[in-house]
Image (cartoon, rainbow, N blue to C red; front, side, top):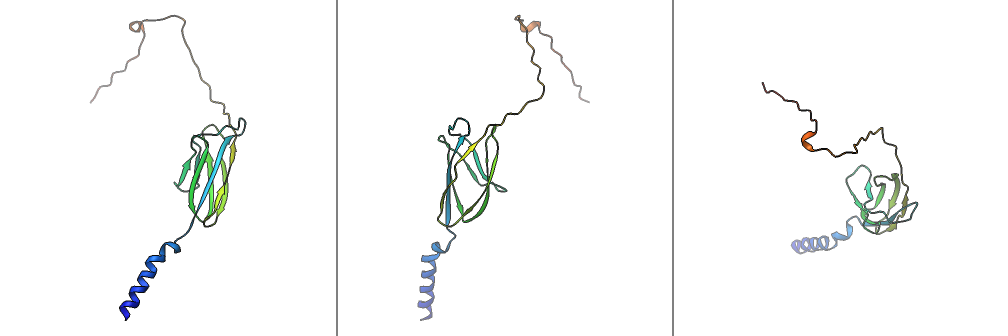
Length: 135
């Protein structure tokens, strides 16, 4: 009798344990350029403080499956302003988050470029060579 009872409890737990697991939510969206409204390819969407995230596809879309909870998401792409957003997800939610990133221009330091008008043979070039002696 006890064996039957233990076996039925084991079967019950085995069959219904997937339903007691934390349910996930889907976060999806579209990232575009604020000026041209073109989709941006390769924008990283990361959960702040972790290594979990994703990258936008060729259409500027992203999909991220997360457990329910509150997250700080960071959207960034080189040459664009970084966006940080807080989002709360509930079990089985599907939330759309569309953003527009603004281009950021940065002035680089001083750069000097020189050139000559005339072609020179490589054998005529002055090259400085240092010889290192091994002790």
